[in-house]
Figure 1: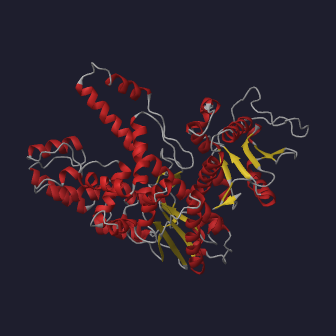
Figure 2: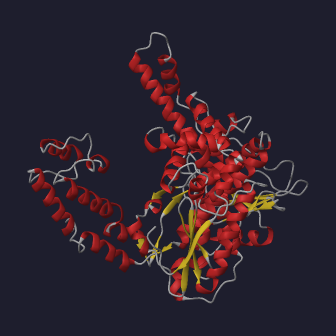
Figure 3: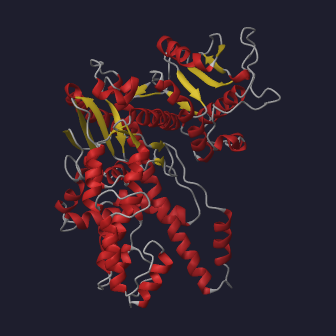
Length: 586
């Protein structure tokens, strides 16, 4: 079965497992379809890319490895791409927690799979055989090294999936998650096209000219001087929250922290320059000239993405901060000469996912072919789009005060099925239960200390203060589980979207070799490819002549992802799509 780019029943040989063998060599084990003969081979590190390319071309198996982030970059550097994989580390994390898995004790016991495995490390001594791949075949024999444990973990995972209550859902989830592992490595290999001159111009405009090492930019120096003068403290350190807080108190500014949210509520000559200083400091620290020197080379920014890095399944970043690029720097994202950026983001992804999950036809109708928040206004629930947005976000994140608290009861009357879904998830969390996304990722169970504290606080003789802390803790966990089911399912939709798009782009013909795009590497310098991802947004870097086709592929992939996750649902996922040479501030 192949839907939206997620192939869940591959042809023979169904699997090809990569792992470390003895002597620093890599072992490739071909696990064929039932009734066919098993085989394995090994190769030296310098032979790996050629061996993998040959097997991929001949059989297109699902590649199984410990961790795509450890194996795939070497193949991409050699110009080898793979259609699909099974990432054992990512899948292990899903299965060991999923409520859909009946028996997970074996997975939980294999806790070495809770952390990434690095094939560059020398293999450890494994002792007794953990997995006999011979299975009666005189041809294959025993395979030495850590490949045995790799095969054993694959067996544990396949048994857990086959024995689960919702095996088809889990198969889609692990296919999407593993596709994400390939995409993350490919995004880093291709890089984001980045205009260093434009980045420097933006920094200079905001901070002043680039200072000498160890010095602060002139505009930060000027703003700091204004703050110190207004506070009457010429020596206060603005970068030390405790010292700054004491100086603010001495000046009569009654705040409990130095956060901008608290400072904005006070009228004092020190507040405006302090907020200006803090904004400049954040830009300098997160994306200043030092960041530019470290992360941008040959006009490419190559962040390190972490698929499933957030507990809900959302991606994180372990280097480069790709998921926190400030809006003012977006113009530095600029296509190579003769290429274009095709960017698309989904309108109100999480609310639409909630509507589809709950099959709430009134909510689906409110967003059909239009902005969902405007549809809520048209339904007469609120009078402004901003009210609608605040209310929906309050429903998703558990807002109970202010505008959210006023609008959410109206949403319950108009969208009863959607609100019942998130309210039910919140109630489950407050009781200490776990909730599960559409495809099968489950929230972590509460820690034992949380359960014990709740039990203690509910005793008749518990102090009132302890009971109130317990209620606050319950509400906090309810807000987490309320959002978990929606945010996690939205992440599944986004992965399905990207997986489908990746395969569509891979079918594009290569263009003539062009030195201007060579920085994208041997795989991606000659055809359209994914260059950026941020939760509900993708950017494709495409030769100008492929830009329109890439835009079509983006739309078709979004439609396919909706049909894959919510077959038969009338839900739509409209896109804000642009084709430009340079990204705009969003």
